[in-house]
Length: 257
Image (cartoon, rainbow, N blue to C red; front, side):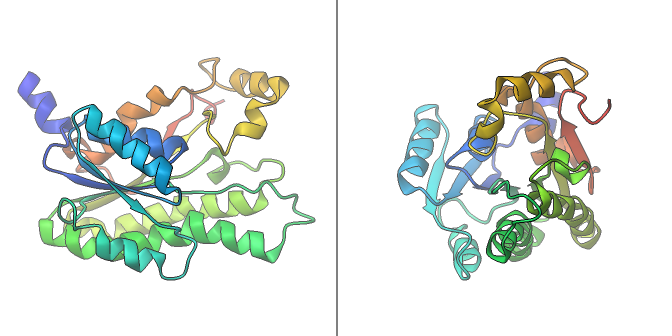
């Protein structure tokens, strides 16, 4: 039995590239994938924080390489894709964790904020995956994990740009699956509920909103980072080899109510 579980879920010998790895969900899941055995390439804007994440993974017995980059910059995706294979070989896991939520009201959202939101939340995940697919195809295996949102399904106040981008992530995930699964590359998305991150600080600063969100779940509480671990390892591993184009909600039943 132990061998079966290891064969299905171990990420030993795999290489994961994680964007948004200097903070929030990206940072946490980079550590999770490393604990499951993957070598991890960490991408984020803050070189100091990335180095700290890499150091923590190394201290825990894993292998990680920090690759600082601002993915909003026009040439950054190509540069990251070109450098990603240098530390451990071509990535065969891509976790698109980078994202922004500027929380502009619909009446005042600027074109600049709209384009920045759609770029980092929707365009970057696609073009980075596109750039890494040849390496995955050559290895005969690939797992793309996007980060969708409750707003992929529901509208929230002051979330029109973010919601549009995350609605796009839902369809992007399905389209990636259609395009690449025949090559052994599966694409799925995590749909987190409410977790405490830099993006959700405005919600966590309001006890009333926090309590309301907890009450909206079937379980009765907001998420803790460890709640994401099982689904993330599953979607990165051999266990999900015949699952593609799916959005897996880790939301305590928020969308079910």
